[in-house]
Length: 112
Image (cartoon, rainbow, N blue to C red; front, side, top):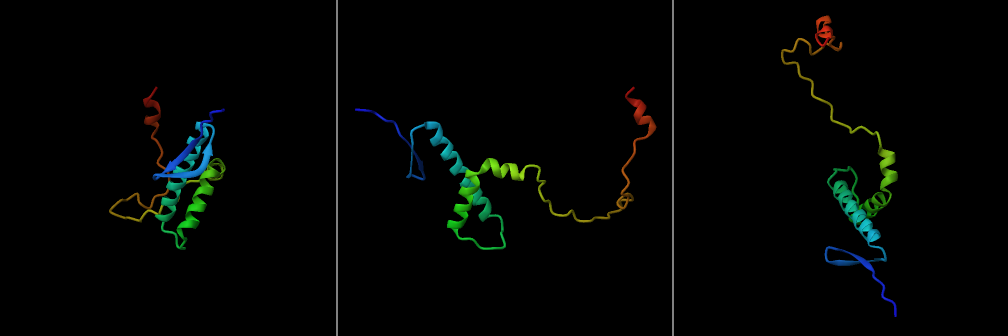
């Protein structure tokens, strides 16, 4: 008789249908599901201009989480898009000046 240890991921009190023979694989799967949950919450709270049902959001979230390294590679170096800064002219005489400020010659010799 052989004894086999199996690892099962339990989420919200429910056993998932996948079984693992290696604890590390079960933990990696659980971590991927955590990432998928976070992605789903991000998508749902993101204010998309289209409506997606929960099943679609969950499927896309799991897909993105399963392919995390590839998604990270695709998004690497992408700067976040910030809303444009409001223009303010509150008595600042340099507000319209686009020239960079230059250091005075005295500032260069100060560190010597």
